[in-house]
Amino acid sequence: MGVSAGVRSLLLLGVLALSGCGERPPAEQDMTYYAQGLAQMDSVFKKYDLAHIGSGVQTDGVHLEVRKRHDPMKPVSESEIKSIKEAIYEEYDREFPLVIEIWTMPETPSVDGKITGMDGKRLLVTGPAAKDGAGPRAMWLGVGEDTVIVNGKTGEPMAWDQLKIGYKVKAWSEPLVATSYPEQSGLLRLEVMEAVEGGGDLQGTVTKIGIGIEDTTQRELQVDGKPYLVLPTAVFRNGDREAKFEDLKEGDRVAVWFAGYSVNPDEQMISQVVLTP
Image (cartoon, rainbow, N blue to C red; front, side, top):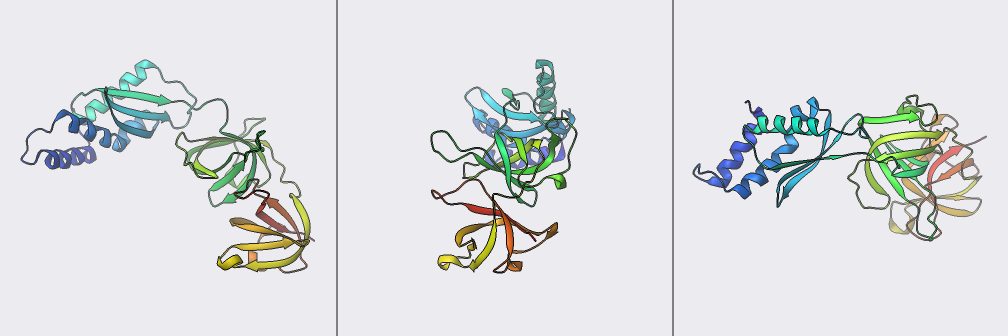
């Protein structure tokens, strides 16, 4: 049975570091080292179309959590799990206690709401306000190699550049989620339920523009005399053309979209500004 060059080097370094003079390391250290090496099993993951989620040592041995890459809702049979385990043993050239857990994407989306922000290959999806008065669920979701974007009604594939702030969507995230607010994770699947950008959450006239509010670099925009903070990731357009914050001037007519969440009560933050005639 063959051992890949990457795993062989990893194991050799670990054994030397743990054993000092070439003596076999204790079983506990063996298990830790095997767990660390699992993240490098690219050939196995590619063969079985898997993505690594995490691996570590528990009382019953090494645990590996993975998911299907292109169809994370697809169940995995016990026979396939057995084949995956055998492929890993072949890479290490030995067997050890190994538990493989397959994460399956749930039918219920992580967040059901609107696209309220975009930044490069990330989008902000914000759900409705909670009934108990708590803030809505909001997630920044980054596109990955196996992200699926479809029309939620027809199932037809959609491209990233077809997405716009204001679209109603259902979004499924990676299982690992950063617990910031908004939360952050990878995007597995996006279903566009209503492809309507709309005319914004507010239409009005720019009455003041500010940069460096309260000794910070925070940008502020007043519309019809009311001030709003502008997100660092905010999108600016002049009709269908890209624009910048610096292009705005007092007296401009604008349509404004809000992020849909706030850190401070009753605060609305701008995520998109479109200059209108």
